[in-house]
Length: 148
Image (cartoon, rainbow, N blue to C red):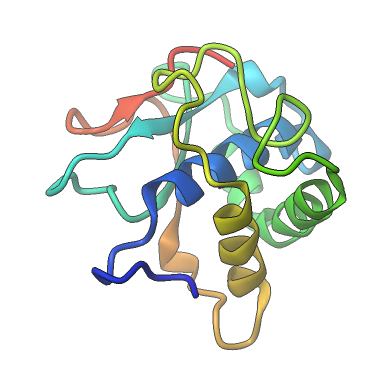
């Protein structure tokens, strides 16, 4: 199930999927994963608390946000392959953990990330509104990871 019992998307699953998407982004756009950031800390009331938020780290962007969003389906498919193909039980550096994570890779939910990615690729999912890719720094209420 994509939603938690409270109706909120599980923060650990969203965060884990963001990590997977960041590390695989060079498959769909010409970039280094360090060119992008994601939201690490999700607090109740944050504008992007229940979204996948990826952003270009450089102020004003470097022109990869739009192509990345255009390539989100193949990127999600690659994430499903990586998450389902990794033999670890709950998440490791090969699938969802990243150096520089503002949450120290705590609480990442590999299986929840896989569920959300599959749902986004499904006919009943595909809610593009759940995925935000932005140029430059995110909103002030977003707490991004420090560096991949």
